[in-house]
Length: 168
Image 1 (tube, rainbow, N blue to C red):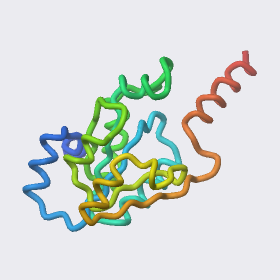
Image 2: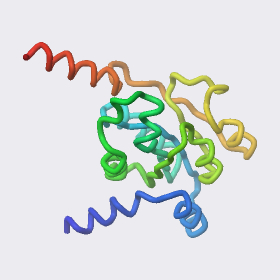
Image 3: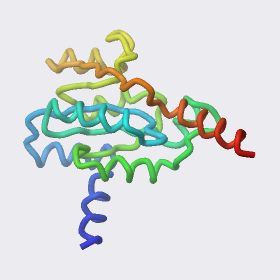
């Protein structure tokens, strides 16, 4: 039984080429795409991803590779390796597929996924959202979802460090 779940979870972690084939095989009504580092999965991430998925029937998450996270967040990140982060995301029932990408932005991946809806966090303005022009030109939508106050990976890392130093 456990092997069945493991197989189902791992089957959701694919590459861009596999996605292209999957898109051909399936008739998804609405493909939603979002991306991020998802370094330490927390309440804010869960709410954000669930809200994103509620907008359609297939949620594709572009996941920054370890190297990409280091370039974006600094040498001490990621906390969790890309395979672990991908597994955590894929284990969520509302995440359909997880695709790792090496670039600093998901622009190239968005062109491959061809989402009907592109979703980002509420801290982005439309003109700052990578891939928005592409999605809009194809007749798609670009949506922002507000953050859940009090939840961020950076804040969690800071708190863990503070708590550790106070206890030692």
